[in-house]
Image (cartoon, rainbow, N blue to C red):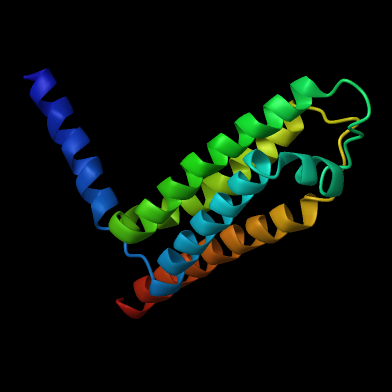
Length: 153
């Protein structure tokens, strides 16, 4: 009996998630962020020397094989997140309001946990815009939801 209640509760949570409304601007933004991540992935993998020199300010004169390898690996994760964001924006729009705040929290949290004393910060403005778009879109969705709740009373 207890197991059955647990299954019903889980189904209820999934049902609530699917009922989350997502404004058109938010899922379009999600698709745009996905394409931005694909571009970042391309820069990190196929143009990693260019990115290392011009964006991260890495001096390639010394032994930097490990840094270049990690830069390329990060590019692969950009491809994965880019494709996922595009797919969410196209076919799982109810998840967009949940994913938007998770993106900057994950990146910001990671940057706090992994110190970067020598790396350049030339890529920071692009990521700052990324974060601002995510947070602003989430706050607008929240404001729309609150407004609808007030109007329905």
